[in-house]
Image 1 (cartoon, helix red, strand yellow):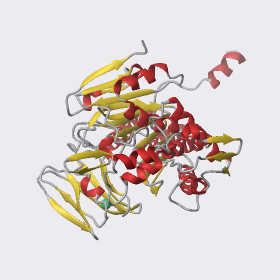
Image 2 (cartoon, each protein chain N blue to C red):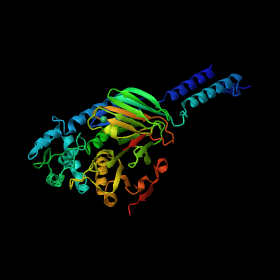
Image 3 (cartoon, protein in one colour):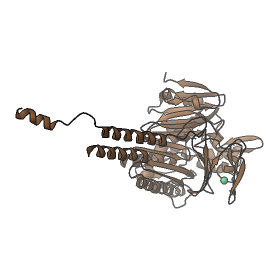
Image 4 (spheres, chains in turn red, brown):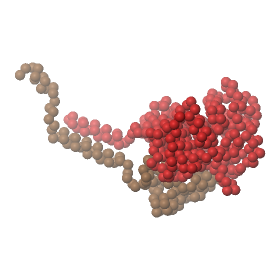
Length: 339
Length: 138
Ligand SMILES: [Zn+2]
């Protein structure tokens, strides 16, 4: 009798194994991008539903172009103090701090300049230098006044959280997964990545880093868990006029398209909002300033910088988890150390 | 025979395997092997599948093969497969035409997105060179 029970038990175990863990995934259009979320494990469907609701909420709160959003109200009230709820207050405060940390290479008050270029619109154009200079005079997060619950934008300033909102949203999803005991999930917010826990077989997530010279290919792959990976690269959006290519990343200090010699800057770290802000900042800084910044910044992060001369620079923390073997093209890989 | 040893004889089960035990072991092993084989990734030599969706709803899924070029039309969108298996959006109703300018995709994990039209073309499956990435940062 017992031996048949053993057989029955073995069959059940094997079948459970073959059926695999629960999985739920969704593709969501929100925050001006396409978001893919996959959650594994018990209750995956419920977690996914809550993740979707959170993204819709954030989109409503943080969009500048939605006239009903708290951010739009703040911009309309520029010149005087505007009462702002805690979440938006904290995010604006963090963004202003990142602007200060990066010497203004990332700045949420670059919004009017981005509007002038109209990269995301149907008719992008090259603004005149006079126009850019006039607009650049209104840029500078250091002039935003934070006063415990109210925020004052100087007259003429407008802020846009597009450079940090997706990263912040990934932070929120990471917190949701942790709170709900999820052990395996992956998220792509238009190419901004967060990988939670491990794959269901316990192995690390393999994150491909797109090749800016050939978006069909990779610079390599990084094996990660519980990490955010965010790339800024001009190659993602650009337009051409009179034979000149204009990439969509602007130096907030001048209003001109950033031409730093980098083709892409990828940040890998434990904070999505920071990674989002820094990937833009590093791209604007260029190689030397980016390396200096990485060496001196008090919070640990890793980065991958691809220049326009066939070099890929990686920070030392990636030495053991970066796999260049999947790169189709030949690059010189250079590891950076803190000294 | 004392009481102690007789109790001991009753408590210890017979350890010599019976023929039926062997049958059970064999059955479990065969089943495990069969399931293991079924769960192995399909060695399809770099087979790619293309999924076309709108607003998160899948409209179409088709295998992408070399040497079978063609066009598929979804409303105002045209998705083209080239001779070499590269997939691109060659016609779209959106004003910006970002999706058309994205160009061709060739590997699992790559996609072409038309945000205004909420139209997505996505490649998945075992890719030919075994890069085996789970997700792409771009
Ligand atoms: Zn389009």
